[in-house]
Amino acid sequence: MSNNYIDAATATWQECHDFLQRHPFAILPLGATEQHGLHLPQNTDSLIAEAIALQVGKKSVGMILPTIPIGYSWVWRDYPGSLTFSFDTFRSVIKDIVVSLDRNRCRALLILTTHGANPQPIKYASRELVDHTSIRVLRAFYPNLSQIITDADSTTWQSANFHAEEFETSLMLYLHPNLVDMTKAVSEYPPYSLDYEMSTLPMGALSESGVFGDATVATVEKGEKWFNRCVANIVQVWSEFLDLPNDEPSDLYEIN
Image (cartoon, rainbow, N blue to C red; front, side, top):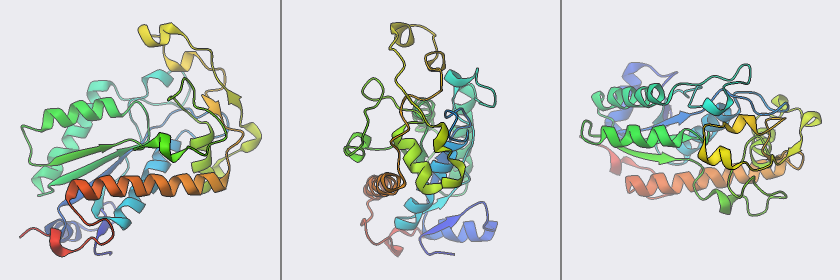
């Protein structure tokens, strides 16, 4: 067991207890099970979140919690195999996890998500917990992403939206190349619809392939580079949140 991180799922309760006595901090990865085109698996977001959380823990500090594999994926609900919590259910799941951590003297939590619809329920769950728990919550969804992918070979859909395209496909080529079928990767930029912004029209109704962007230009090299940048950015904001030196987690952050 490392001094600065622990895997809560594979540790014993005593090991978790001892770790939280030294470092009362936890990291919760939130993913999704939803369509990612024909070239990526439906657990893409979960796999990426889990990998980032592990590296953030290794490079900073925290008890790494099991990845939640289902999120708020209402926009993809018509794709077979895609799963979604309701907004309120997902918010409640997050709150219940935080309450459990609070009972065990955890004092700070990084909620790390790689699915674009998860930040809203996370935000409202966090706000509702402020008056009821002692845990400080930091939310992270690819901080400074526009700076991370400045060297991308494609543009994102509608300036900021992306799904199963160059960025996510490159990350998966780096992390899980055996799960990526580049022979089925496509480039699709669905026509913009005002109904998508102003009505209940789901994002899933706009695309034929399920891809928003260009997956064909993804590479392992870009995936490795972008993954490391993502980890570094989150380590920085998490360390600043905890008032930790970025390069050396230590016993200065123990509680008595």
